Image (cartoon, rainbow, N blue to C red; front, side, top):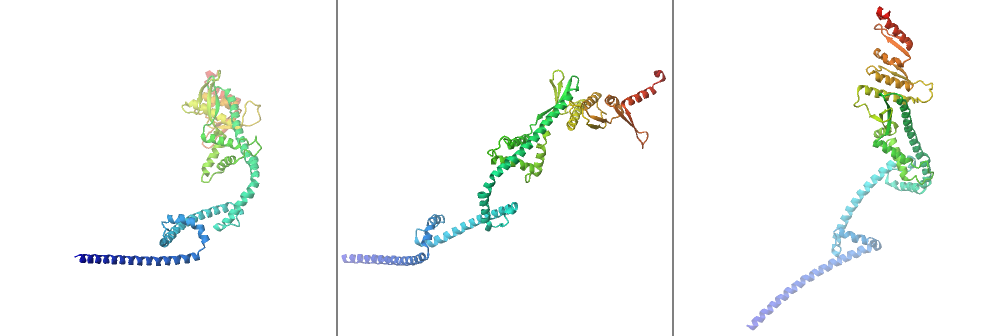
Length: 425
């Protein structure tokens, strides 16, 4: 039994040893395979390194060290180098593609700018074309401008800005201000004439010119003052900065008409440069004894027919005096201020007509009044000659020219001719 047990144990040990031997043989085979593969990789790597410029590779070592992990490659094992190479190549191709797209867009944009630049400055770009190959030429032109031409012309530009452009703006502002003052002075002259006539019993009318609250006009006045401020009081170039230049440029661009805003800017220019729009006009009715304001007439709204008529005559007379530059306070000049009024005073009341005729006479206007017969008694005290027109038949008309004295004599004779004999005696 003991020998049998020992025999069995020995057989088991032999079996285990055979299994261990087989496993060792397999591991030895794997090691031999790995050794062969490593030897092959080593030979391949040695051959590759023999062909490479190690100094050039060292320049890219840090970049590749950052790039490979981003490409999803692990270069910690020699056998993974082929996979790492493929992954890196694919990543580089994608990066190259994106950067080529960016480069293409930038090139197209640059070529567009070249085209625009050559269109604006053909004399300076005769040797350049619209291609990236000409970029060196454009850079050379830029260096020439910034390093040589611009510094040389900077002082000349500031002198021109000061002595020409800004002073012209100041002169333009001065002309507008003179027109503004002229309007105020003429209104004062007209008001002197209006003060001598009763608008209503015990009251007279005065014209008012208040500064407008229109935002567009007030902004223009502010910008104009900003452009010309210190233009006449300072002869140094210190105040003529880029900010001042941009202020002038913005104003002149609107006067000239900006691209896509030509019509809008033309309307804006007409509005802001018309000094009459700088005012809001109204009429005040004042008490003659105290000069207290009785009523303000911003327009004719809410007025009766007679009030509207008198206000209209006032505005008409004032506008005529303004256009003729009439000053009733000065010595009478030999100037003909002729006004024709057709169908005059036909529907209005007599007091309004008398007011208008007194006002026209006081302002020194020469009138030709065309009116129907029923208003002769209103006009007669204010005229020196009468042109009486009648139409005896369908094809002919007649004009009789009479002095006012002759007219009155004819009217008196006609009245007496139509009186009954008892009244004539």
